[in-house]
Amino acid sequence: MSFVGHTRDLAAARRELKTRRLLVMGGAPDADRSAFLDAVAREVADEAGLPVYRFRVADAVSEACRGGFVVHPCVVVVDGIPAADGIPTAGADGVSAGAADGSLLADLISAFAGSESFLLVGSTDAREDAAPPSTRAPDDHTVLLERAVTAHRRGRLGEAEQHLSALPSDRCADGWALLTRAAVHCDRGDPRAAGPLLRRAVEAHQVAGDLRGEAWAVFLYGRMCRLRGRAEDARRLLHTARERFRAVGETPGEAWAGGELARLATRSGVPDPDALAEARRLHERTGDRRGAAWAHLWWTVARADEPGFPWQEEFANAQGRFHEVSDRLGTAWTLHHHALTLARTDGTDGVDGTDGTGGTGGTDRTDERRREADRLFEGALALFEEADCPHGRAWTMLEYALRSPAHRFLNGEWAAEIRHVFHGIGDEAGEAWVDLAEAGPSPGGEPPYELACRYPAALLDTPGWTEAGEPLIPRAARDTQPEPRPGFPRPGDRDRPDDSRAHVRLTLLDDVPVPDMPARIALQVVPGPEHPWSTAPLPPLTARATSLGHAEIDPAHGVPADGAEFRFTPHRPGSHRLRFTVEDPVTGTVLQQVEAEIDVVPSDPGPHRPTAPARRPSARRA
Image 1 (cartoon, rainbow, N blue to C red):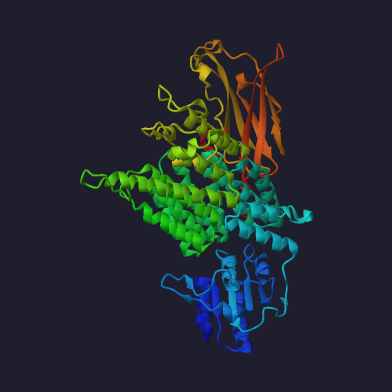
Image 2: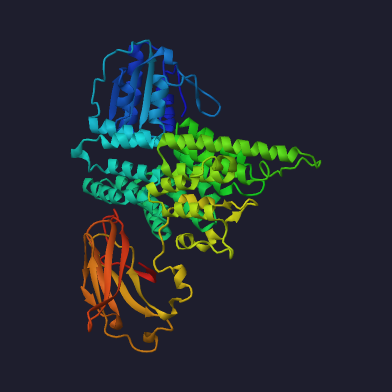
C-alpha cells in the first residue's frame, strides 16, 4: 500500500488508487475534501463497475467497514478521520509510517489489507461522534461474516469460529460463510470437517451462479486433499482451480493455487522453491501482502536445509511480512520453522559452529543457538494457543520436547499430552510420529507400520537420528495428515505376502467425473500368483455396486469373470462413496467388500460441455 496526502490532482489520485487500492488525503476544508473524494470514487467505480459506499466517522465505522467489503469488491469512502490519527507518509518500501498502532486509520488499513476493495480516507478535525453512515450499511450477516474473514486472515481461528457460529440460522447456506468455515478447519488441522462444508459451498455458489466463489471452493477442496495426503486428487483439483481463477480474472486465487501445487512436491521429499518464488512474485504483483508472506515462508522452508542459504535473514523477512498484515498464525509457523532450523543446524547461515581455534567458542555458540531455539519454540507455542491452532501447537510441543530434553523431562507425561492434542483433531499420523519419538529407532531401520502405510517411501527415507536418539522428522510431515493406503500389508502379512491372496481392483476409465455425466468404472478380481484362481478361470462371482450418496450406478450387478463395468453418474459435485461387494452366488458368501471415494468437480463454466467423457490415455486407481 502507498499513501497520497495533500493532493488536488484528480488524475494522479486515480492512478494511485488503481495501483495501490488505497488513498489517504487531508489538508483541505471539509466540503472540498469530501467533493474530491467523491469525484475519485465515482470515476473509479464507473470504470470498474463497482458500487460505492460512503461513511462518516462513528464509533462502529471500523466494524461496519469489515462488512462485505473484503468478500465483495467495491469502492469505500470513509471521511472524517480525526486529525490526531495523522496522515501517514510512504517510506522507501511503500509501508506507512505515522499511523499509531490502534488508531482508527491504522485499524481501517488493517481491515482492508489484502482485500479487493478500494479504500479512500479523508482526514479532518471532525468529532468522533459525527453522524453515522448515511448510506447502505451491511446487515448483521455481512458484518459477522466479514468479522470472521478478518479474524481468519489475522490468524485468530477461534475468534473466526465464534463469528461464524453467530451467523443467523436462515443464512447458514451462504457459500462464502461455508468456505470461510472450511478454511478455518483446515488451518486448525482438522481437514476432515472441511469436506462436507466444501461440498455445500460448491452447491451454494452454483445455485447463485457465482463462478468466482465456485473457483475458491474447488481450490479449498484441493487444499483439503493435500492436507489429507491425497496427492493426485489435490493436484487435479488445484490445476482445475487455477484455470478457473484465470477464467474469471482472479489473479490472487491463481497465485494461491500455484503455491499449493508447489507445496505438493514437498510430500515426496523434493521441494520446488522456484514455483514458490513465482507464487510470491504473483502475490506481490496483485498487492496480496498476506499471500506473499505465506509464499515467502514456504519458499524459505523449502530452502532452509540448503548449505549456505541465509535462512536467518529470510525467516526474519517472512516474520516481518506477517507482522505487517497482523497474521498471528503465519508468525507462529515462521517461529516454528526458524526454531527447527536453529535446533538442527551446526552453525548460522551455513557457517559451522567452531571458532577456528580449537577453543570453546563453538560450544558457546551451540548453547546460544539452543537457547534461541527454545525462545522461538516458546513464542510459536504461545501464538498457536492464542490462534486456537491445535495442529501447530502439537507439532511445536513435539519438536520443542525433542530438542530440549530439560523441558521434556520436567513433565513425565509429555508424550501422552502431545498425543492427546493430535487425537483431538483426528491426526493419527501425528500420533504415529509421537510413538516413533517415544520408541526410538527400530533395530532394522524400517519405519513403523503406522508411518509406512501413510507416507511415500521417499519421505520416510529422509528422517535421521540425533546422537541422543531423537528423530529428525521431515518438515513435510507436518504439512499432511495422510490416511492409511488401502491394501498396504500389515506387519503380520509380511510373512504371507499378497501372492496367496486375491484382491479387488477398481479403475476409473474416463476423465474426472462431473455432475450428471456418466463415468465408467471397471472392477477386476486379481488373484496372486500363488492363489488357486491364478491358474484356473475365475468362478462366476457376482459384484454388487451400491452408491452411498447422491449418485446412480448402473448396472446393479456385474460378473468380474466377464469384465464387470459400471456407469457412475453423480448428481452433484463433491466426494462420493461407492461400495462394491463380491459374492459367491452358489453359497451366498460375501468374499470381499471394498469402498471407494471419488471426487466430482463442478462442471466447466464454459457454454459447451462434451456429450461424453473423454477417454483417459491410461487408467488410474479409483
